[in-house]
Amino acid sequence: AFLGIPIGILADRVGARHVIVGATLLAAFSYLPMLLVPTLPVLFFSRALFGIALSATFIAAAPFLIALVERHHQAHAFGYYQVATLSMTAFGSLIGGVLPRWLVSTFGLPEGAARPDLIAAQTPFAYGGALFIGAMLCFVSLLPLLSLPNVRHAHPNTPFLPLHAVPWRSI
Image 1 (tube, rainbow, N blue to C red):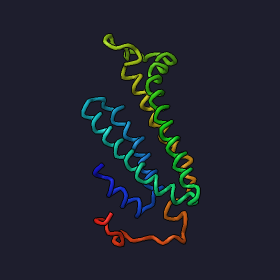
Image 2 (image 1 turned 90 degrees about the vertical axis):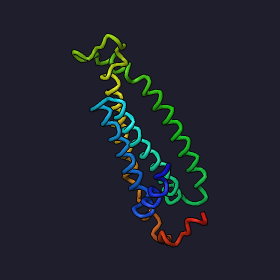
Image 3 (image 1 turned 45 degrees about the vertical axis):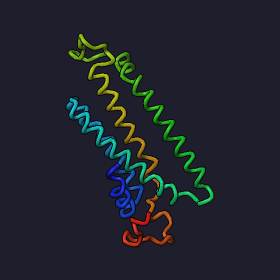
Image 4 (image 1 turned 135 degrees about the vertical axis):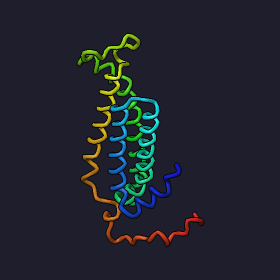
């Protein structure tokens, strides 16, 4: 939450699409520490990175949609965005709950991965595979975004206000 204003300023300076692409890459790479060193401090660090990425995406999404959609269609666009976001959140939770069990039932456990204190779907192999697939899905989600224009270039005739032109205390 404390990064909201700096992320907004960054989106104004470099463009919302660039911030969303960077945030999606950060989200994908935030899974890597948990795959390599699955400990509690690393989990906190990884989730903090993911939280920053999620915050940046939400902050940059509004100006990105506003710049890409004609004014009389903006409410529809925000509605579609919210439906897609909430639906994919629910779908992601479903996948995250089912994927470890599916990975173990489909591929089995590698030699030495079984642990007597855990069922097969709770092993680091199963959860690591699910995290890896989640990271890959983040990368795939970038493909449609890369074909869209950056917000600052979406409407070149729109005047760009410099940061000092907005009195932040009056907002």
